[in-house]
Length: 86
Image (cartoon, rainbow, N blue to C red; front, top):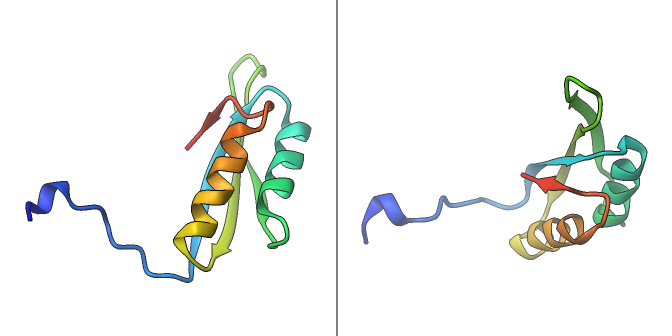
């Protein structure tokens, strides 16, 4: 198999971070807590846009397996307060 096209191997459990961007920091924080429940999550403010319209929060959580990691990603992505998810 070509090494350039292989997905990186992720060893679980591991610490994973999601960057969550939207217009209202409070709603983003609520979205993160809901998406990660029942697992504890650490939320930190990453930055705000120059005009203050957009806010970026970083959610850091220990995930036990790929299914959990992807489920949290899908929950965040589908939340109406989340504009961009990295």
